[in-house]
Image (cartoon, rainbow, N blue to C red; front, side, top):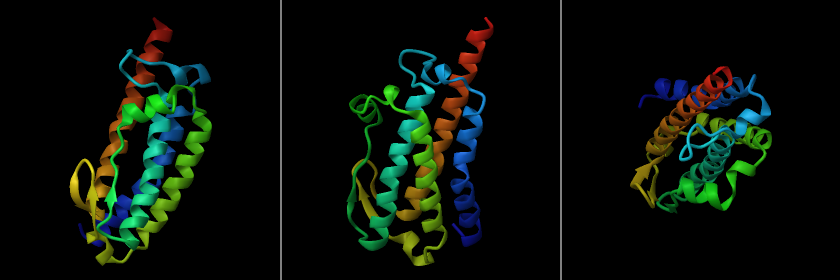
Length: 162
């Protein structure tokens, strides 16, 4: 990826918090616990998951800069959600932590030298990947969950009307 395209992606990455905040802006606290189906996560669970992933990435990004080639662990999302009882977590705290982590990660990525983007890591689920690939995975990851949030909120609203 060229520097200019990456810079735009990093700026968008750094602004993802704003999208989350907008989605939650008019949502009553009770709606945050709503699950559209038994096998679907609530708004709270999604936000806490995104925060845990961002915390993992905080360390992954830094490790691949300082010590390329290290192994980084994947995250079994359902295992983490159950072990940490995501449904009972404070979504406002998680959202604020996400904002801080995403801001810090975005700032780090913005100023990395070009050569660092090729630094490799061993991902336990994906094999050998470089920083560029990890960053792209995270861009895709949040988009999946933003869509999931929109869908959950839409189902909740439909149930309030009907």
